[in-house]
Image (cartoon, rainbow, N blue to C red; front, side, top):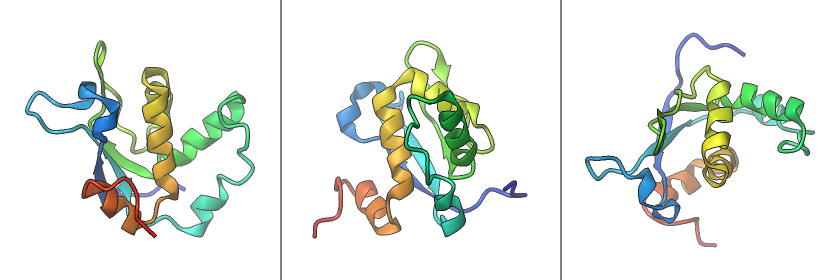
Length: 130
């Protein structure tokens, strides 16, 4: 699935509910950037990953896919510093999971959000209202 260039992404700031640890020195929130277009083929790769957090092989397979879905972030561990960038770096997701499981789960669920939902998140809404 290797791609020659990074696709267009949408930036989503880490919500305030994750605390002040995800606020940069300049007062901005740390962010995650997810690619704007996710096709059926990529989504199909997640089918059957029901034991994502208890089976190392399934987690590694998911990380191999996540590296093509997340184009950038400025996430940092409060003690060890910046995490590796996610684009083409499956190990970045292991580092994220090791740093903060709650944040990792939030990041991973961004895959299933529509662009409208991501825009709503970025504008400060938690989710679209029906």
